[in-house]
Image (cartoon, rainbow, N blue to C red; front, side, top):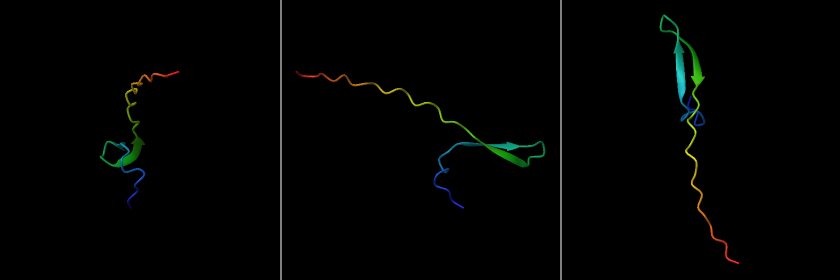
Length: 44
């Protein structure tokens, strides 16, 4: 089944000692860099 909402989300798969998949953990995305503000000049 294809789920477009979770397609681009990074997941880490957790395996036990025997190599069996026992869980999946959602990895948080890194914070985006802060935007640089453009200084606007206001004319009066």
